[in-house]
Image (tube, rainbow, N blue to C red; front, side, top):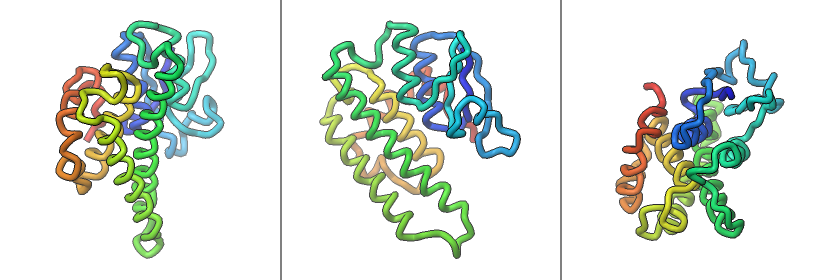
Length: 202
């Protein structure tokens, strides 16, 4: 298998972490979709990473789809429960974390525009989504160690990647100070070898 990914993409990091947690051998192919010479559209018509190329040569894209696929490749440990109702809870947590990332990426891209062309209201709206998303994460965590059923799931991997992306791109967002309930939770995730090995380059 091959994983086509950017080293700074939190969505790609989610898949890289799952590959490490499951000990699935996979060649990492670094490709930046923004570059003129990118090959990503040859694998994903939407031009986005990550893309997993299966051993049979099938490209699989969109990180939630890839994550679910990986549970079919190696079943232990499972990051989506067999019980479909509990799996929905996990996927809701993943969607929440991914939504925080989507809003953060939108701000990052908007801030690349010349200052006079940036839409302040748009940025404020995305910042509101981040804040509401973090508050919802705290509510779902509810003082526990993990988001769903007291065990590590895809929801936690996605949440850890979201918080890590805020650290990476938005050090001005003090989520630790504003949401101290997330602090011990995040630090435990960040200490996992899979998170350490996938930390984005400075």
